[in-house]
Length: 286
Length: 282
Image 1 (cartoon, rainbow over the protein chains, first blue to last red):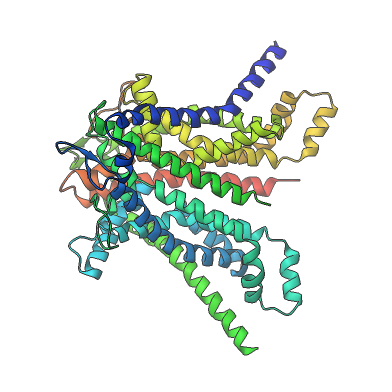
Image 2 (cartoon, one colour; image 1 turned 180 degrees about the vertical axis):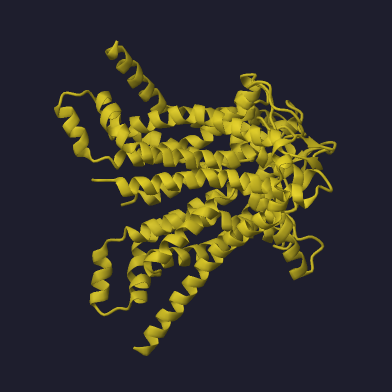
């Protein structure tokens, strides 16, 4: 009896171990199953490089270039804000802050990670966007800039914690060697610690990009959702993720609009796959 | 010499400023949510159904919906996640298959939440015929939460010293007996912490449940696991973008309830972690 249970539970352990692989494959299959149906009606290059996303006009047009550029536009802005702040904060927390402060700062950043994205989106709508509207005298504060600021904060916990880990894991002897040669604390950080942690920092940036490009709700709420080619950060844009979230509710199952939204899902899946793989290779380089 | 010291001072000052720029908004956001949310937080608000197209009444069904959905997510993801972590840490050899499993987990962790929503719609809602339901929503969220639980459990298992296992083996225990009798009991606090954090993230997610469970307006409790449900994150979205003229009291009240729920879970995890650290004897 005991042997039988052990046999059973060990089989369950093996199956569960393989489950992650199965789920990744299932996700891909079920995106393809619906998404590929679009390409019998719309050629793939017209889907990827078409400049008009007009899914409910007659005839509909399913060009996602404005959405891809919208995503990249917002992501670029977010990374521009998040990386310098994140690197500086990670160094401060790991190397400079006194012990009692370190705990408080780390919990503050963890707290940021705990706030649901819908709540940040809500705050973005009621506080950030009116602020930007008044600051830049815009017709509406729901812009790419609002999206980038929101996303920068959402990526921050990921970026800070990974960089902090890689700074802490730089061997102590490197730093001691530098200090013994008469370098100041800052010179040591700048010339020794940071270069030694470079691959971790790069991985953090990649994972930050992955987090930002996949974020949905906050972006949907604060970017204003206009499917046009972006030219300014003070303009509304629309991202890949927001398009799926906003339109799937109205798309009739089995229509080409429905398939097109799944096809966008395929694009997002492939982007996140590549980014995560690259980040993992960077983190395991040693 | 003076110059390098001044550079150092400026650099440290700028880094401290950057850290403040990140941490201060968190405090401000929490303050805003509390300040505007508390006045709306009456007994009626958390115990009554919404009325007048969600412009009055309470959010009782959305609270219960979120609790049920989180419970469902836990039921699917905890056993699967813990067993998978046991496989990776206690059974798996260092070969290509293990590496493939690790890559799959990293990948699952990186898939955008809205893509989970599409996947849940394709597999659970349509293909398996669950419809938009608590069952479909829980299953979708469970797969999304799985990488968090596996990673945390694995960390907790690998923190148990190797010597513990060797002693158990030397006494003639099998691998499973060692896992069950020695490794798991020592890893429980770490597993709990990670699991609760994963579930708190699931409770606040919106994108994966948009098309798999969330009901726009359903002023009653779900009748079965095949029923749709109102849930807090989606309700916030609806109140702030889909329904005009909702009073801020109701909007902020709902935000406060969700944030409160997520923070209770996070604080629970933090307390377990802190207690365990103090008791740890090896």
